[in-house]
Image (cartoon, rainbow, N blue to C red; front, side, top):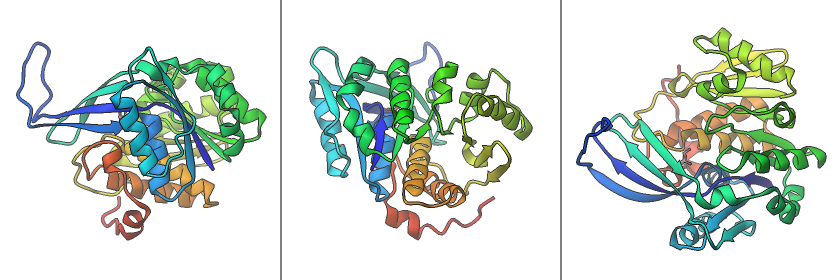
Length: 305
Ligand code: RIB
């Protein structure tokens, strides 16, 4: 079992030719509501890739909350540990996607930010049941720290995706086995500007010195860089035509979690997750773009590099 602690958002997505400037009104091409939220996306990716997964989270008592739970449940994510806050709306994300597939996202966390350490105590058996615990930063930091602490005490393997970017205290950093930031998040975490591969390695070493065992730094169309205390290795991305990059990072993390859970090596897991991320950018939306295991297995991945 993989246990995800994380956010559930309804994504309100507008497709635009170009991003609007401040003060500008633009006519968009299309609008959709798509299930999203980094935690829910990662859990959904794991389920679609054949993993056994449950999510700890919080929604509001509203139609978005019910729809998000139903959609995860349909995809075989165990939603028993999603609580409902009667006084706070479900989280939403306002997303604009331009013709290049790039996005701008504003998250209004709503009920996601009502999840407390007490809720984790109430769901402790979910942490006990998971061999791997996955978290991001769209739920309160105290709750993330508490969850990773419990995971550590219970001998679980923990993965943190530090998104959206935030500085983390040393206690929390010390609980992480595998950290998966992008370059911006690594800059914020390490306090070091990143312009080259060497910068990434020295920034990662700061975190390894604080107790993180290994890192995978995602670099978009440049691929990813794996680093532990002794070695580093680049994994190039596949060349695909991007339609919408939303949830590409989430699907990569889901791919890593499910592959490690199945006993694959780190190298095999990164290779698998790289395919998952590549397929995700070829489709629109967050959970709507996550590939199935069959799609990943059938992906030929030509032109890598
Ligand atoms: O990582 C993509 C996700 O970020 C979106 O689904 C949105 O909800 C925000 O949480």
